Length: 84
Figure 1 (cartoon, rainbow, N blue to C red):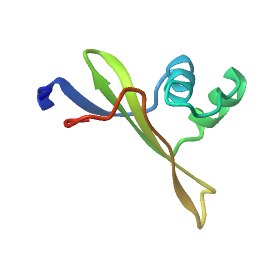
Figure 2 (cartoon, rainbow, N blue to C red):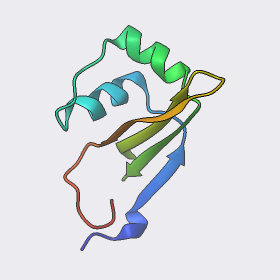
Figure 3 (cartoon, one colour):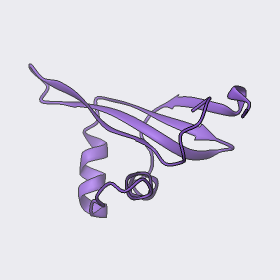
Figure 4 (cartoon, rainbow, N blue to C red):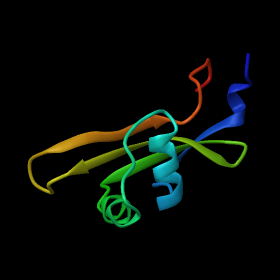
């Protein structure tokens, strides 16, 4: 069983490159670098799951700044296993 202490969840968003990799690795559609940059900049709150210094997952809250918020971009870029 993997050591759960080897994983961290950090506030923030991944880089554009990591965002695109975290989307495509599990089979989600790719986004352009330009679109990803705009979207990440408009994140209300985000977290990045990290293992060994490498981003392995992410989650974002996006919204319209008034009435609606949505949990978006939930991905784990590695095979799910205990501790992730």
